Length: 241
Image (tube, rainbow, N blue to C red; front, side, top):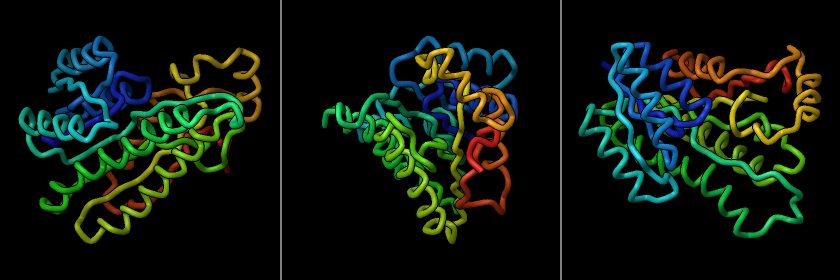
C-alpha cells in the first residue's frame, strides 16, 4: 500500500486531497499546524471508509518539526512514497503597508516550508528510486495578484522550485509537479466580499468558483501518471490561459 503525506490537511484543498487519496487505498499521513480537530475528523472519515490514516502536528517552517513529522509517518506507515504539499498562508493588503515581519511570515509559510518538506521527502525517495510529489502553488504565482505581492512571490518560488527539482531528481526516478489553483471555495478566500467573489466569477471563463475536490482530483492525476514531471497544471476554470 502506498503511503502519502498531505500537508495542510486540515484546510480545504489538503483535506479534500487526504480524503480522496484515502479512498484510493493509500495510507495517509495528515499534517496540521494548529487545527487538530479538523485533521482528526478527516482521518476518522478515511478510517470509517476502510482506509489507514494518522494525524501529525508540525510547524513546517521549523526543521526539527519537519524531521519529526516524517519520522512519525515512517514509523507508523513506512516509506513515504508520495507527498501533496498544500500548507501555506496568505496576506492581503498594499505592498507599501507590509512590514518585514509580514513578508517573512508569508515567505516562510509558503516557500521555506515547501523547501524543508521537499528536502526531507526526497532523500528516501532517491534511495528507493521512486516517488512522486505535488506542490500546490497558485495562479497568482503565475501572473501576480494586486494586494497579494508576497503571496504571489512565494508561490512563484514554489513553481520554480518544483520545476528545478523535477530536472534534478528525474534521473533518480522521482517526479515533481505543481498545481496552480484559481479561485477555490476554501477558508483562505473566506474574507473576500460577495462583490469581490462575483467579480472573480465573471473573470473566470467557466463562470464559477472551483471546489477543493476538483483540485484534489488534479493532484491525484499528477501523482499517478508515470511520464509527467516538471509540469504546472492550472485548476482555475480558464482564469489563466
